[in-house]
Length: 361
Image 1 (tube, rainbow, N blue to C red):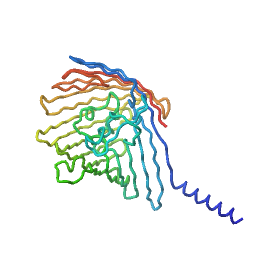
Image 2 (cartoon, rainbow, N blue to C red):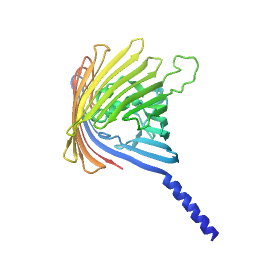
Image 3 (cartoon, one colour):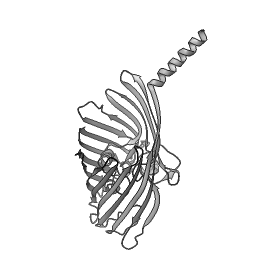
Image 4 (cartoon, helix red, strand yellow):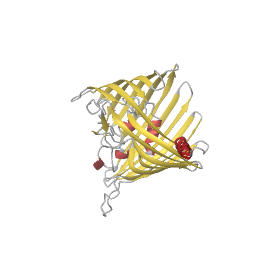
């Protein structure tokens, strides 16, 4: 009898613990047939089966434990998956070129790494304290106010042509604070990240170390956010600032953003860009996406690129969608942005398209 009571008590404790915590497996598999064409001398075209044309392919685990008193602890481990060949995307360990592939870029390939996000958090009514590898606040404005979510052939030139360097998207070794969602629509995100170099009195001691801040307002159909971030390098500190806004008129969700960047080196280089676009719902399952973006720097002959992009997404269910996107970029001043892996001559045009489908779980 006593053994039975002990067993029942143990089961009750396990039940309470289960009710107070949860772990979720989630992911996305997105396959894209992509083509790009260049123009001018030495140009080339490219056709490939690739990935992440609508949503980044990923595999992740996240969990939360209720600590009581309005507090919780959580973790988030998320890996980018290159599903067309089964490999994983490389990560970056120190926010510097020596730390493998540029942070956030799906260029280097290797075994599965949790390079998209790898954080542990403590949260309460006071906000959230988050530590690990994470997005930079100054990137989040670019992706939130891009109709194409900074993915695929339609991705905004304010990211594609950026001089923002390794921390343009993510940073390793970061500690961040996010305000609670009880400030009348206002919110903020402050993040500091480290290059973790040995302090030996060299000019490179602070390479990869930086701070980023994002503040804004979101209520009803309106959103507006301002962000800025600086990463230190001996070759020149990189400062990125942007402003994004959107307003949902129901028949169309308009989006716009402007960006300013600067490398404070002996030969300083500044860049600026802008985007305007939006989402247009079609029926209950369709979505038209369109954007015009531009980016230029003051280097040399002031290279400049402009892109127009038009896409359509058809949702077969809440988790599965078909999509297609067409984009064309015009280069001038020596710029040579090519689409979908195509090579185009300086000051020449490039075009490309995506056709794909995405399934999430």
